[in-house]
Image (cartoon, rainbow, N blue to C red):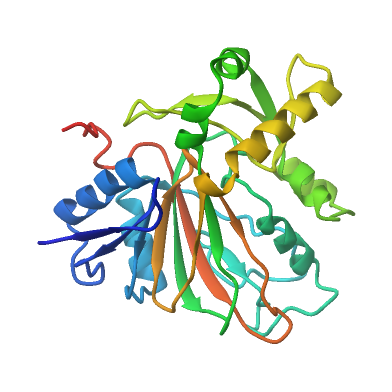
Length: 296
């Protein structure tokens, strides 16, 4: 097996070619992918054309599958996809484009903010795998930010200041930032706020990252106004152009990223005219290859 790695930006991200996950998702292949993730944090595998079952099988090699609550639906609406798949689309349960007044349309708006998947969940979220089933003819790219490089470049005094700080993360905070309101009590109860460190050490590589997301509402044990200023300053620093690249999707692409050291965001497209069907799996805990050190 010969895997070709082509960098997607000067700092991080790579396109991996020479892999067909439908035919081979053996330990050798999946171990090579995770080793590439240790190095690049984001890897794109073009032309995979996965179905749901294969995407789930592949994802389970990298950790324990999380289950999507797929909020935003009315109580009477069924989910479009099975529970292990996060519906990153503009489609309703009948696979038509969401109506203008559909709550799920508003829910998707916060995906355009810089965030880390499931930082608002008390779990060791690791990788996300996003599969492109239908893409619009233009726009709809996904941005990624390297939180390792951003941390490395912080001034020493800032590193010392944030070393032991913790933040509260809430999905309801990020949804409200995009105009979300009228959340139901059952929705809020299903995902209460959690705390996350502001600096994280990657369990495989040992590299430090600054932990940011639009879900971070405030810094604990700090006046809220002061904490917001610090979070906003860090977010502006970590999303400077040198730490960011945007991925242009093609149907059949699979992109995998490490939530422990990146942020990402969606971008706009004409979602009233064109369908976009993206299906995400997200895993937590160590992979089957978790004992391997990146230095091996």
